[in-house]
Each structure stands twice: as structure tokens, then as C-alpha cells.
Amino acid sequence: MEPVGGPNDMATVSTSLDQTVVLRDVNWKTYEKLLADLADSSAPRLTYDRGTLEIMSPTAEHERFNRLLASFVEEASIALGIDVESLGSTTFKREDLERGFEPDSCFYIGHSNHVLGERTIDLANDPPPDLVVEIDITRTSVRKFPLYAQVGVKEVWRYDGETLFMSKLSGDSYIDIEESTSLPGLTVRDLTEFLDRSRTTRRRELIQDFRKWLSR
Image 1: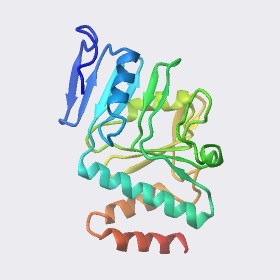
Image 2: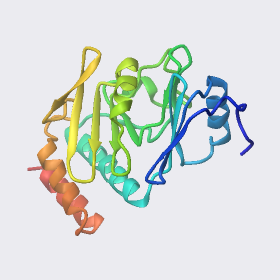
Image 3: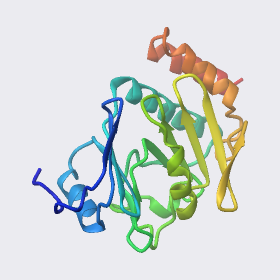
């Protein structure tokens, strides 16, 4: 990757648990250059908010829980007969808002038909994901909530390694909920139990048990 920005473009640098780097005073052009350089890479993930750039490299544990929650969403959508488009950590950005993000996982549910077959998503014209999943084991994504709220993400799931939190958009902020509004029947308590079990249960067995639970 080529060096980006000038001497004043990264005025402040901070790190967290060797997994996250935060740069201050980064301009939009530099952010887009980094996106282009990393276009074929699954990591790191970039979040940009009006000059602040977070660069996050997920750990194995982080991705294990991320993929498991994504599997739960997909299994639940089949059981509930709900169409879901899973777009992983797709890059979403709005230059007019000077904001951009790459969630751990995201899903179009109510708007699944709108993005079916689309090669790119433009938030200036296309709807945001209906559901975003964030794993917070090595850092917190709470500061992303105002960004998600501004672009209109309806529901966010956040897992900190012990507890799953569900939040839905209410006005211009999020409120905690105990049951998903996007996938009715999925609750904080039940999904947290399955996530806990994943530490000692093989994935195939866990998914089979989750399917049985869905068909109860």
C-alpha cells in the first residue's frame, strides 16, 4: 500500500489492544484512497466519521462469533420464510455526510428485493442495511451508533463476548430491545445462550440444535 496523506493528515494516532488504530484529521480523499487500496482485502475494516478514521483488524475469536451470528440470522430467515440478503462487511459511505463504515456483518431484510443482484450499494440512492452485527470483544462499536442512526440502520446487534445486546432505531438514536424486530422470535436471552454454548460445542452440532430450536 502506498503512503497516504500529508504530514498534517494523521495528527493523532491511538491504538487499542493492538487490534484497532484510530487516526485523526484524515480527509475524505485519503479515506477513499485507503478503500481503493484495500478493495480486495477482507481485513482490515474501516470506519470514517468526519475526519476520524478507525482501522480494525479482527481476531480469530472476533470472526468466529461474527460468522456464527450471521449463520443464526440466515437460519432464522429460512425458518421464518423471510427473504434476507447477506452482504457481510460491505463498504457503505456518504460523501455528503463525510461518513463511511464496514460492519462486521449486515443484512437487508425489509429491503432485500431492492439490493438483489446489485453489484454496488450507493447510500445516496439505496437504503441502508436493515440489520447490522458488531462484535465488540477487542473494542467498542458504541461510537458507531450515531453514524448508523444518521444513515438509517433500523437494528443493531452487538456482542461483547459475554452478552448480546439488541437495539432498534427510535428517532435519531437507539433503544435496547429484548427481541429482534427484524426477525421476530429471536431474543437476547436465547441467542446469548447459543453463543455461550459455541465455546464448548462443535459448530455442526450447534447449528443443528439451533434449527431444532427454531422449529419448536
